[in-house]
Image (cartoon, rainbow, N blue to C red; front, top):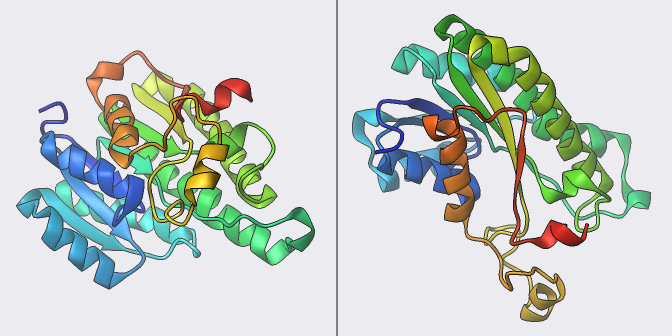
Length: 246
Protein backbone atom coordinates (compact mmCIF):
# COMPACT_ATOMS: atom_id res chain seq x y z
CA UNK A 1 0.00 0.00 0.00
CA UNK A 2 2.50 2.57 -1.24
CA UNK A 3 0.05 5.49 -1.15
CA UNK A 4 -1.78 4.56 2.05
CA UNK A 5 -3.87 7.48 3.44
CA UNK A 6 -2.70 9.99 0.81
CA UNK A 7 -5.19 12.31 -0.92
CA UNK A 8 -4.44 12.92 -4.58
CA UNK A 9 -6.20 14.83 -7.35
CA UNK A 10 -5.61 13.52 -10.87
CA UNK A 11 -6.84 15.81 -13.64
CA UNK A 12 -7.95 14.36 -16.95
CA UNK A 13 -8.47 10.97 -15.35
CA UNK A 14 -11.57 9.39 -16.89
CA UNK A 15 -9.43 7.58 -19.47
CA UNK A 16 -5.89 7.00 -20.70
CA UNK A 17 -2.86 7.81 -18.58
CA UNK A 18 -4.84 9.75 -15.98
CA UNK A 19 -7.25 6.86 -15.50
CA UNK A 20 -4.33 4.47 -15.01
CA UNK A 21 -2.83 6.79 -12.39
CA UNK A 22 -6.14 6.99 -10.52
CA UNK A 23 -6.59 3.20 -10.60
CA UNK A 24 -3.08 2.56 -9.31
CA UNK A 25 -3.44 5.10 -6.51
CA UNK A 26 -6.67 3.48 -5.38
CA UNK A 27 -5.01 0.06 -5.48
CA UNK A 28 -2.22 1.43 -3.31
CA UNK A 29 -4.49 2.83 -0.60
CA UNK A 30 -4.93 6.50 -1.59
CA UNK A 31 -8.07 8.58 -1.61
CA UNK A 32 -8.44 9.91 -5.15
CA UNK A 33 -10.30 12.74 -6.84
CA UNK A 34 -10.80 12.05 -10.53
CA UNK A 35 -11.55 14.81 -13.00
CA UNK A 36 -13.10 15.07 -16.43
CA UNK A 37 -15.01 17.59 -18.48
CA UNK A 38 -18.00 15.26 -19.03
CA UNK A 39 -20.51 14.37 -16.31
CA UNK A 40 -21.24 11.13 -18.15
CA UNK A 41 -17.60 10.03 -18.27
CA UNK A 42 -17.04 10.93 -14.63
CA UNK A 43 -20.12 8.98 -13.51
CA UNK A 44 -19.00 5.95 -15.53
CA UNK A 45 -15.51 6.15 -14.05
CA UNK A 46 -16.94 6.34 -10.52
CA UNK A 47 -18.91 3.15 -11.09
CA UNK A 48 -16.05 1.29 -12.75
CA UNK A 49 -13.39 2.28 -10.22
CA UNK A 50 -15.67 1.55 -7.25
CA UNK A 51 -13.53 3.34 -4.68
CA UNK A 52 -16.31 4.00 -2.20
CA UNK A 53 -15.59 6.85 0.20
CA UNK A 54 -12.02 7.04 -1.08
CA UNK A 55 -13.17 8.27 -4.49
CA UNK A 56 -14.53 11.64 -5.58
CA UNK A 57 -15.30 13.02 -9.04
CA UNK A 58 -15.04 16.68 -10.06
CA UNK A 59 -16.30 17.90 -13.41
CA UNK A 60 -14.80 20.92 -15.16
CA UNK A 61 -13.75 22.02 -18.63
CA UNK A 62 -10.26 23.50 -18.53
CA UNK A 63 -10.80 25.50 -21.70
CA UNK A 64 -11.69 27.98 -18.97
CA UNK A 65 -8.45 27.45 -17.01
CA UNK A 66 -9.60 29.33 -13.90
CA UNK A 67 -11.82 26.33 -13.14
CA UNK A 68 -8.77 24.18 -12.38
CA UNK A 69 -8.03 26.10 -9.20
CA UNK A 70 -11.63 25.75 -8.10
CA UNK A 71 -11.61 21.97 -8.31
CA UNK A 72 -8.59 21.90 -6.00
CA UNK A 73 -10.72 23.75 -3.47
CA UNK A 74 -13.53 21.19 -3.95
CA UNK A 75 -11.17 18.32 -3.26
CA UNK A 76 -9.78 19.93 -0.11
CA UNK A 77 -13.31 20.63 1.13
CA UNK A 78 -14.27 17.00 0.51
CA UNK A 79 -11.22 15.20 1.92
CA UNK A 80 -9.86 17.84 4.31
CA UNK A 81 -6.39 18.01 2.79
CA UNK A 82 -4.36 17.42 -0.37
CA UNK A 83 -1.12 15.43 -0.47
CA UNK A 84 -0.60 15.28 -4.22
CA UNK A 85 -1.81 16.49 -7.57
CA UNK A 86 -1.17 15.07 -11.03
CA UNK A 87 -1.72 17.66 -13.75
CA UNK A 88 -2.53 15.27 -16.56
CA UNK A 89 -5.36 17.06 -18.38
CA UNK A 90 -4.26 18.29 -21.78
CA UNK A 91 -4.84 18.19 -25.46
CA UNK A 92 -3.52 19.00 -28.89
CA UNK A 93 -3.49 17.98 -32.51
CA UNK A 94 -0.87 17.30 -35.15
CA UNK A 95 -1.09 20.52 -37.16
CA UNK A 96 1.44 22.04 -39.55
CA UNK A 97 2.83 25.38 -38.45
CA UNK A 98 1.30 27.21 -41.41
CA UNK A 99 -2.21 26.21 -40.34
CA UNK A 100 -1.94 27.41 -36.73
CA UNK A 101 -3.83 30.51 -35.66
CA UNK A 102 -3.64 32.58 -32.50
CA UNK A 103 -6.99 31.37 -31.19
CA UNK A 104 -5.95 27.73 -31.42
CA UNK A 105 -2.54 28.52 -29.94
CA UNK A 106 -4.15 30.17 -26.93
CA UNK A 107 -6.65 27.34 -26.47
CA UNK A 108 -3.85 24.76 -26.38
CA UNK A 109 -1.90 26.79 -23.85
CA UNK A 110 -5.02 27.39 -21.75
CA UNK A 111 -5.55 23.67 -21.26
CA UNK A 112 -1.94 22.46 -21.17
CA UNK A 113 -0.23 25.27 -19.24
CA UNK A 114 -2.61 27.78 -17.70
CA UNK A 115 -4.88 25.16 -16.11
CA UNK A 116 -1.87 23.32 -14.72
CA UNK A 117 -0.42 26.60 -13.42
CA UNK A 118 -3.61 27.58 -11.60
CA UNK A 119 -4.23 24.08 -10.22
CA UNK A 120 -0.62 23.90 -9.02
CA UNK A 121 -0.88 27.32 -7.42
CA UNK A 122 -4.03 26.36 -5.54
CA UNK A 123 -2.47 23.05 -4.47
CA UNK A 124 0.76 24.80 -3.45
CA UNK A 125 -1.12 27.15 -1.14
CA UNK A 126 -2.73 24.18 0.60
CA UNK A 127 0.52 22.21 0.76
CA UNK A 128 2.43 25.15 2.23
CA UNK A 129 0.15 25.09 5.24
CA UNK A 130 0.69 21.33 5.51
CA UNK A 131 4.47 21.66 4.95
CA UNK A 132 4.37 18.70 2.60
CA UNK A 133 3.07 17.60 -0.79
CA UNK A 134 3.98 16.49 -4.27
CA UNK A 135 3.02 18.04 -7.60
CA UNK A 136 3.45 15.98 -10.76
CA UNK A 137 3.05 17.51 -14.21
CA UNK A 138 2.52 15.29 -17.24
CA UNK A 139 4.49 16.87 -20.07
CA UNK A 140 5.61 15.08 -23.26
CA UNK A 141 8.70 14.21 -25.23
CA UNK A 142 7.46 16.98 -27.54
CA UNK A 143 8.55 19.43 -24.83
CA UNK A 144 12.23 18.73 -25.43
CA UNK A 145 12.68 19.52 -29.10
CA UNK A 146 10.80 20.29 -32.29
CA UNK A 147 7.18 19.24 -32.47
CA UNK A 148 7.92 16.39 -34.84
CA UNK A 149 4.79 14.42 -34.00
CA UNK A 150 2.46 17.18 -32.77
CA UNK A 151 1.92 20.82 -33.59
CA UNK A 152 4.22 23.64 -32.53
CA UNK A 153 1.53 24.89 -30.17
CA UNK A 154 1.47 21.57 -28.33
CA UNK A 155 5.26 21.31 -28.15
CA UNK A 156 5.59 24.88 -26.89
CA UNK A 157 2.90 24.37 -24.25
CA UNK A 158 4.57 21.23 -22.92
CA UNK A 159 7.97 22.98 -22.89
CA UNK A 160 6.37 25.73 -20.82
CA UNK A 161 5.02 23.09 -18.44
CA UNK A 162 8.52 21.68 -17.94
CA UNK A 163 9.85 25.16 -17.19
CA UNK A 164 6.97 25.78 -14.78
CA UNK A 165 7.80 22.51 -13.02
CA UNK A 166 11.38 23.54 -12.36
CA UNK A 167 10.50 27.06 -11.24
CA UNK A 168 7.92 25.81 -8.76
CA UNK A 169 10.24 23.06 -7.52
CA UNK A 170 12.88 25.66 -6.69
CA UNK A 171 10.48 27.86 -4.73
CA UNK A 172 8.51 25.10 -3.01
CA UNK A 173 11.40 23.00 -1.76
CA UNK A 174 11.88 24.98 1.44
CA UNK A 175 8.30 24.16 2.41
CA UNK A 176 8.81 20.42 1.99
CA UNK A 177 6.92 20.38 -1.32
CA UNK A 178 8.29 18.61 -4.37
CA UNK A 179 7.44 19.23 -8.02
CA UNK A 180 8.46 16.96 -10.87
CA UNK A 181 7.38 16.17 -14.42
CA UNK A 182 6.92 13.08 -16.55
CA UNK A 183 7.51 13.19 -20.29
CA UNK A 184 5.75 10.21 -21.87
CA UNK A 185 6.47 9.06 -25.38
CA UNK A 186 3.94 7.10 -27.43
CA UNK A 187 1.50 5.35 -25.12
CA UNK A 188 -1.46 3.11 -25.92
CA UNK A 189 -4.28 5.64 -25.50
CA UNK A 190 -7.07 7.12 -27.63
CA UNK A 191 -4.51 9.46 -29.20
CA UNK A 192 -2.46 6.58 -30.62
CA UNK A 193 -5.23 4.04 -31.29
CA UNK A 194 -5.38 4.83 -35.00
CA UNK A 195 -1.66 4.42 -35.67
CA UNK A 196 -1.07 1.69 -38.23
CA UNK A 197 1.43 -1.12 -37.60
CA UNK A 198 3.66 0.42 -40.24
CA UNK A 199 3.55 3.81 -38.58
CA UNK A 200 4.27 2.28 -35.16
CA UNK A 201 7.28 0.43 -36.52
CA UNK A 202 8.50 3.63 -38.16
CA UNK A 203 8.62 5.50 -34.87
CA UNK A 204 11.86 3.73 -34.00
CA UNK A 205 11.16 3.18 -30.31
CA UNK A 206 14.23 1.28 -29.00
CA UNK A 207 12.09 -1.00 -26.81
CA UNK A 208 10.10 -1.89 -29.91
CA UNK A 209 6.60 -1.06 -28.74
CA UNK A 210 4.32 1.66 -27.40
CA UNK A 211 4.08 2.19 -23.69
CA UNK A 212 1.20 1.14 -21.49
CA UNK A 213 -0.67 3.69 -19.36
CA UNK A 214 0.14 1.66 -16.25
CA UNK A 215 3.87 2.11 -16.93
CA UNK A 216 3.47 5.89 -16.79
CA UNK A 217 1.26 5.55 -13.73
CA UNK A 218 3.98 3.66 -11.86
CA UNK A 219 6.34 6.61 -12.34
CA UNK A 220 3.65 9.03 -11.17
CA UNK A 221 3.13 6.89 -8.07
CA UNK A 222 6.87 6.94 -7.36
CA UNK A 223 6.91 10.74 -7.57
CA UNK A 224 3.86 11.08 -5.33
CA UNK A 225 5.15 8.90 -2.51
CA UNK A 226 8.00 8.94 -0.02
CA UNK A 227 9.98 6.64 -2.31
CA UNK A 228 11.01 9.85 -4.12
CA UNK A 229 11.36 12.03 -1.02
CA UNK A 230 14.70 13.48 -2.23
CA UNK A 231 13.62 14.04 -5.85
CA UNK A 232 12.42 17.44 -7.04
CA UNK A 233 12.75 19.61 -10.13
CA UNK A 234 13.26 16.56 -12.34
CA UNK A 235 11.77 15.41 -15.64
CA UNK A 236 11.52 11.65 -16.12
CA UNK A 237 11.18 10.38 -19.67
CA UNK A 238 8.89 7.36 -20.01
CA UNK A 239 9.31 6.75 -23.71
CA UNK A 240 10.89 3.35 -24.31
CA UNK A 241 14.19 5.07 -25.04
CA UNK A 242 12.80 7.12 -27.93
CA UNK A 243 14.43 10.38 -26.85
CA UNK A 244 17.92 8.90 -26.62
CA UNK A 245 18.36 9.83 -30.25
CA UNK A 246 16.87 13.30 -29.78
